[in-house]
Length: 344
Image (cartoon, rainbow, N blue to C red; front, side, top):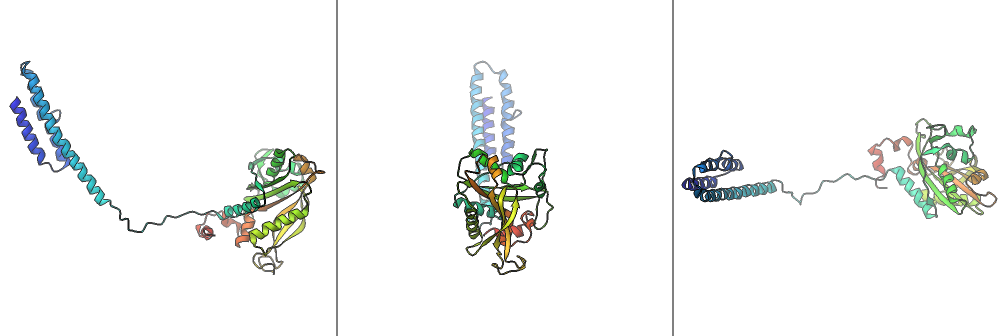
């Protein structure tokens, strides 16, 4: 049996030297070392050996198996290395070739304008306050001097969730929440940006959802002149040093007196054109002195402090700043439109 094992080793090693592929190598592994392989067949005859011969033949058999496995492992490693080298050659990257340009995004024009507005007012000492978009009727209307059944509510036809919960129609509720959080302390100097919702039909100048930024200042001896100076500073930083404003009397339930603010036409500089309907002015926002009842409901004594408030639509500012004629362009995700603002 020893001679047969030595003969098997010689045959196996000779055949392994001629192997040219991993498949051939695997076939030889099965042929010599498999469950039905040649080595197994020889070892089945160990039952006829004497007790003294079995350990000796077992040792020879282990040596034969180790010799064959060593050559197989060596060949396997060689095949793996050759495959790796071939893949490296086939998949080599030419680092001298120009790279493929990757498309990059840009800030949406509405976000760009909103950030610019925020930066201006932060530079004037304001802080930013935010609140929920799903709001209580009390904060959205009643605390702003708009009791139930007040006719002014018709101007802000609303999306109601329940009788007392609605999608906010302006960011003014954030002003009320800020006043209550301050517990009568002064000064209050905040802007309130965010989305608002109204039941408007979509057209070139209206949308059921849009963005607002409102401002609130409360302190002792706040006057209408402070409001006008603040808005003039804002307009000149937003539209240029040549921009001027005018205030026209208006009505808002939460301010008294109230005003609409116009800016000199960005198209003609105030000379009169089609955009401003030959008036030289464009309406930009609403404002006024905070109504005494609003101050009281916010926790302030109107005999001790006063304040002003203003509110603007971000879309309106963007339309004027960039000369856009249709608000719907902001929401259609047309890259031909949006790419114009990528480098502004």
